[in-house]
Amino acid sequence: MGMFPFAAMAYLVLSQNVVRGFMRPFTEGYMNHHIDTEKIRATVLSVRSSLSDLVTVMSLSCFGMMDKRLGLLNSLMILGITVLLLGTVSYRRYRVLFPTN
Image 1 (cartoon, helix red, strand yellow):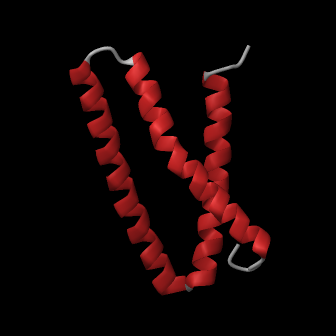
Image 2 (spheres, rainbow, N blue to C red; image 1 turned 90 degrees about the horizontal axis):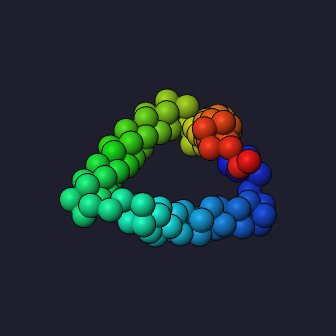
């Protein structure tokens, strides 16, 4: 996206942020429906939040170091490729673990 600043790219970023905004209520609702004990539910939500914050801090730190060494354009391209690869691997793994049939 950093190399091709088109209006369509802005639409994709907006769409991604809308999906991210809906993700937390859906996942918490799913967990609330499937976890019966309130104490366990609170623990799961707390651990999930803590891990999410830790991953965010580590990711932003790595991105900052890449930006300093490689520049913003190269860092954004590396970030995009990394997210695409990890997303593909995660999706394939999800489909193996949770088949639809």
